[in-house]
Image (cartoon, rainbow, N blue to C red; front, top):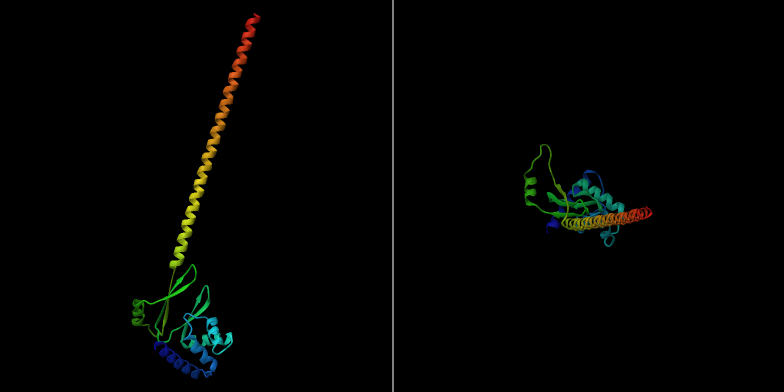
Length: 210
């Protein structure tokens, strides 16, 4: 019922605008207008064209030009989405559009906040009449938060593993160094014993000669 009321109001606004601008209200224009109230919001040029392909086929250029016209009439609002490009949403008889935009995956979620709506309903601007407004809140969605938390845990595990491997390698190097030191000491002791034996033997031989 509310959607039908919005569509009728949109038709009225469009009729006033095209009369003022001396434009024609073509069958294609009427079809695009009805399509934007039939497809899920937010919509793109392509989603509107896909819907019309089965109802009233028109070119992509025709869809785009009419959406731009509807924007100037005040029937729709538009925004740029990182993943989908230009997006549109109907705004007739709707004061505010509330959206959450994930800066990680670029997905947009629609929500309603009565306190924001009340704020703009009561807001007045000097020499300016507000017809509608769009509120976009940027952040990170729950799905991306969970993904980032998993990646962080994975990174911490990897760093811990690297740390343990580094400690193990350090212990192995220390052990090898101690083994080499012990081996050098053992060889030095053997050499000293051999030298002592050689000296002792020489001393005994000299004593016999005397």
